Length: 277
Ligand SMILES: [Zn+2]
Image 1 (tube, helix red, strand yellow):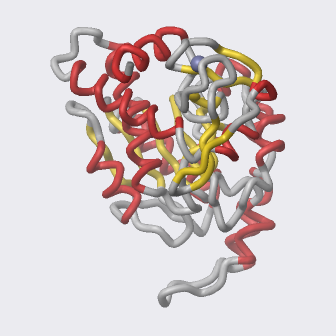
Image 2: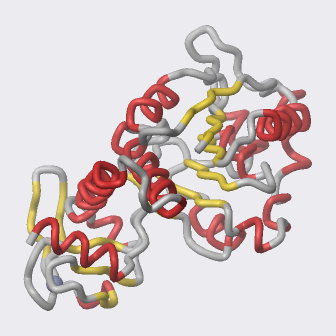
């Protein structure tokens, strides 16, 4: 699978997030960090489309301002992390940093006509957008959660991350890519290794997840393999990094929240059950 990474405002094509993704990328996948003209939205979108065509890209990953551009990169599968939902509101707030300039009025003006455009993309294309929000995004918080949900027709999924991609979030995105690789070729030579990585990664959403649970309509337990509404949860235990919910049916700390990045399928719960119990 060929993947294109689109960085955020004043980021660099092969910066920190790129390196984290590269580190956890499954075998057989390639990652390209692209340079684009961030000062002109129209030009940037054309550059992204050209790169997608030229490099036969299968998946685009965009963060922050790169996430906004990625939302609009119609026609390809995309992972969008902490998207800058309204550049005309958010960009002017960013100050000069590390000697890099703040966003100019001219630059911001090029983005405004593209805002809200992706909500009118055909539903078949929206299916190809996978939107993720960091649980500790210090820049946007969860401000745009419901706007994204309305535009996309389903809620964004949550990751353990600040605004800048954390290593945990990069690892999760790479495990979701690994799952796509396995789905594409079930006899992939690294499928056992990839499955183990996916199960281990999914497991981390079973602890310190109170805010994930609060955002979930339902949860799945990989101890008793039940799926049930989150309001049935009554008990939590305190962990080092926060609170962990207990299953109301089997009293085990083995709950996966629906708001997390993994689809709560019976197959996943059964596999996790086999791996840990
Ligand atoms: Zn249970």
